[in-house]
Length: 427
Image (cartoon, rainbow, N blue to C red; front, side):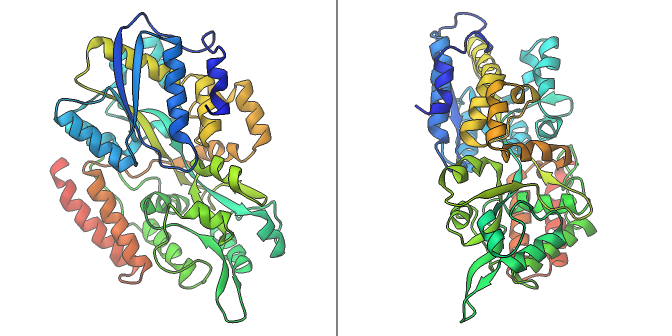
């Protein structure tokens, strides 16, 4: 069992939200793991702790692979009349779940007081990808923002202040040039910057668009996208310039999953990745490192990301009651603190940061505060109807610009045209 959750089994019943009654009920719960570390076992410990406190509830926590795998499996099960009662899916899956008509709004299962005290207690930045048309479809849990990790030893070796992260786009280029090391043959032995462009490129790219002054890549209704604006084009031009013009990043498509290892192995001195990798990097880094906000251009900015709890239709009243109770319990301060500390995800409520454990953790690991502080500048991740198709269009065109098949302006114009055609049916 993970050390971070032992306190749950030692007696959190007095401070946790408890079961609403004796429920002889079985729940099925799908969850993905998209970061390094031991998140799967942490989830299992979490559900076991709840069952220990509520012996009449049995939760079958099923690890279902990646986010995409989990979404596919949940939709398939729901279409077959065998949906789980709960699943953690991407916050951006909200419109897909609504379109499939397989999830229920959480508002219908809580009191007026809980609408304010519980649902109203999550950070507003996370709720932008959790609510639409006055309903709450996702409860933030496995949430994150991208952040910068930098190798302090590499900074010192390059003559940079090891305690100061690049704060602007220009700083990133300047620092990157100092940190890119080539041997006598001209081969790069250390890259200054790594911005992964496979896996979740549109997510990190949204951070560039935000810092270039644009609030979102889509409207709140999920029916329009804004891919070919001057701000979006300028952001992609900057991204392409890191490898092309400035030669501070490896050329081509850089793998998302390999990015933490590239940082830990010293291949790249600065990396962009999720704060969800904090625990993994902290456990495995053999050098001092820092965590910083994404660099600003017109303004600071970063997208929110990660997973929400979804409540599936088709369950019995008893199952729904137990499912809602479990999620209230899992997002209560003590449990949320344990989860955040164990995984590196951002605790999604202010009251979690008021716990003694979280305050002690923040003192020990100041980098954990960066994503929370960045929320004041956060924008929603790209989320629309036909979300996977729209996101893939953008990802493909970002890739085309990175490898030089299209200019950034042409790539984003093509993405806009194709997305407009898909979303026309929803307007």
